[in-house]
Length: 307
Image (cartoon, rainbow, N blue to C red; front, top):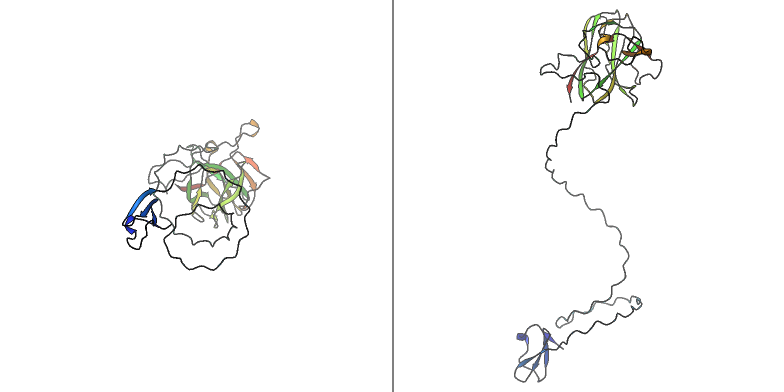
């Protein structure tokens, strides 16, 4: 039975009595001179029947040629057929081009200031607080723990001195210096910094100067070679050696101003440094043949700034 979408589309000529068309579910019949809407011809929906068993899928037939487009109005939508079987997965497509980099996000709010950290071992005062304007005039000696006046120490040639110190806040060392108070003929002095292993023992050489201090003449000897170097909080060791020549005398830190590294046999002397026999600064600190000493400690001064 043909259908229309609107009564205005019904033909007014060439009709026979009893001709009928569906318009939006209503049946229109030709009465001889006009069309009459006799009402909806669809009855109430019946109860849903039981689902029958699904038949076996038949073999796919060959695809026929495409037919010509037919005439006539579009028919009503048919019932949905059963779901077909899942097809094979297709091959992975090519990777798309990388997208443009997004704009940088807004900077987050500044977090609250953290509390001051506590170094693992902090019996020295390095770095020390100071007022503005003294960054390059006051030398810091990391292992001098009080204001006892400095003194002097005559070095021993071929002895490599090790003195531990702590860094409680990150600093950048910009200059290292010694003060030769009595010259040693044909002598030089080398200094270096070693880090510590997990047992706080001297470990790897992390800084030294390639040109030795001239200790054959007196005065303050300075170097900026291989500097600056940043020292983060932790345990470090200053090392100093006079390889050859006549031993010079340097400015030193009195025993009373040095940190006690232990009391030998609980006697009357405190250990202030350790040394081994050597004429150079090895890349890795020795692991044996150490000697403890209770003596004046060579003063190695540094310029530093906070990082």
